[in-house]
Length: 521
Image 1 (cartoon, rainbow, N blue to C red):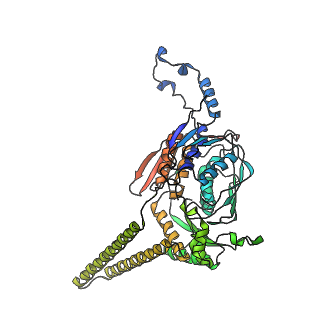
Image 2: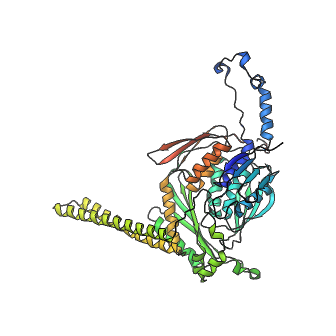
Image 3: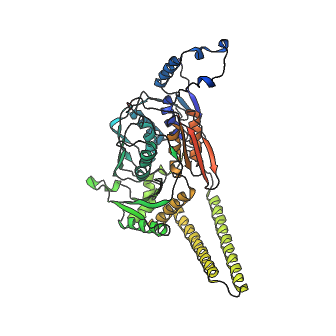
């Protein structure tokens, strides 16, 4: 008997489709019958055989349906218009990792790699599982799939992953350790041995990092009513250095505190220096690098994070090596797409120069506007004979703010010019990440933009009750996640925009997924 597949097209958000397809078999819900006094009258001859069946028999059928494997999925047209079509190496590595964590999984890929047939298996979990993630994508790319799936495994998971721990594309292991896992503990009720340990770090292009994560199993997730984001009370962070001068970490900390101290006094950033693996002549195989991860905690326990690592060129300059030599060794790792939902741009160097010219013109226009405002204020001062001291102080404050904004634009433009050349010094990296954290706080919401897809997914597979969370403006990946959840799990969200705060209230009724492998306590 041929297998019926549910079709998808394109490679958009490959990971979220695997997660929903793997958990799809547990998403069948038993809708309770309405009370007898509200049940409409139905003629006996119009009732179907399913309606005539006793309720206990229908419940038994649904129990059998829950035990069946999930519906197979087929993804067509995977990067058919790309110069390198088909499934990427890191996506094939992700499928191999899922095969180690499940039993009965079947995957079929055609010769060109543009069509994938995926039949999920039973998530078994287990201990002493190891996997090499490669150097194309970071370990965080794989953990975003492993964490929600293994919460519904038969056995607790003890997993060791090797590869890149920090890079510019994927979420770092520091963010997962300090934000993702605490969020799952506090908000979704999973707190029984959930831990992540960073054994050693590794950056692109060489990799060499290693982490160990322990995931318990949960009966079901807790109902979520997460609407109060609170006010930021403290900021914590980690500045790591690998095979570069330890002073680089201090430069990252000073640059970050130079921005945060204007807003908040409670700021503490740790430094984590790794000299590299020098045993048996392996020192030269470890790539140099440095990076920064920041976490802002609010009064209600919400965590907002940003992180980034240095490029190979920046790290090589700090380590005293040739930039061109490191770029040659990096191979084809730079041609990987940064996000699954992002669109590739085909602009050439001339288009980039035009954009730079437009940016410089905009800066000149903004400077002219500031000059005009200052002239207007001077005229107002001349018109008034005896200005009040408060008004004079207010004008002076505005002048200082305009001067700071002008200096900031000049500094930011110079920083981006250095970044285009593949070189970003620790001061630039620290300021860029810190400003990104301030922007995340300004967006609002109970979580940052990186964790929006995970929060939406955990709400969708939660209990069969009303759950709601207040998020910031939805990112393109979050919108794509909502579409995949509706197509695979049949769960829809009610989105209400809050004009006063600029946030979005997300409400839904979960699919009621339960882990039948764990006994109820």
